[in-house]
Length: 334
Image 1 (cartoon, rainbow, N blue to C red):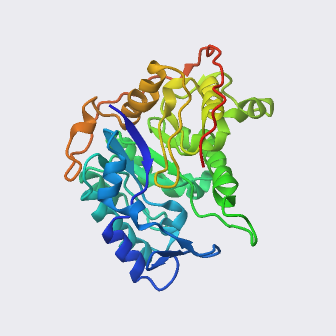
Image 2 (image 1 turned 90 degrees about the vertical axis):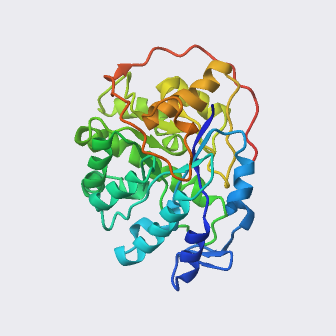
Image 3 (image 1 turned 180 degrees about the vertical axis):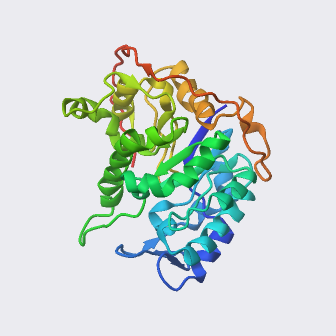
């Protein structure tokens, strides 16, 4: 069994909804138009469900989510909901091995509507990191996070919209503001999110922008929790390779690291740490994040049932020292 917790796939209902818009975010044919960014030419094959199913042939479960950098979750409710409803409609119809994270506008945090969506078999909720940067953000999202906690379902934190300075190269947004957002959201959850939501399981995209590697600096400035690892706070590996993944494992231990690829924008990369590590990151840890049984990936993706309440959060533990591992010298391909 293998699980990828982070993919994106724009289904026909979602594409049609973007094309009907007259203001960004919108699609003109296959040209994506966003505020403050140059036009982006989307490859139609990247969002063809049949093509993507073939690409995912080696996976037992691939979790797709709304593309939060589009800024849909921060639109006014009357603009956000039609796009989110279209995303949900397309995601429900995806073939195996796909399942999906639910979405919700942070401008209209409706717990009743989220509950109905989760009843349709979504594995949890994704929110943009830009909505969770501080105490005010977590307070606004609290009604949605309470629904997740009550249902024992996880939250996925993904980069949100990014301001790109004029003249910046194409790689600027994913390398600079996305990383900054994830770093801030990691520490905001540690400071205010976890005390408010003590049982919530959460996963941060792109290794939380490598925020865990700043623990020494945080503790030198008075942050509590030296040597403590929250077993319900996960990070996924998208866009990083052997050196970064190895460093985060040394800081957090391997039990909270899960595989994410960010398909179709990147490929999953994993250091050669052996079969046991591959099983932990590619399967066992993801199943614990989702809170379901080991056969969760075998259910039909077109009409999935909600994952059962099978997870009990253990107490925080102190991470034992990691044994040394040799770097592979291999770098991920762009």
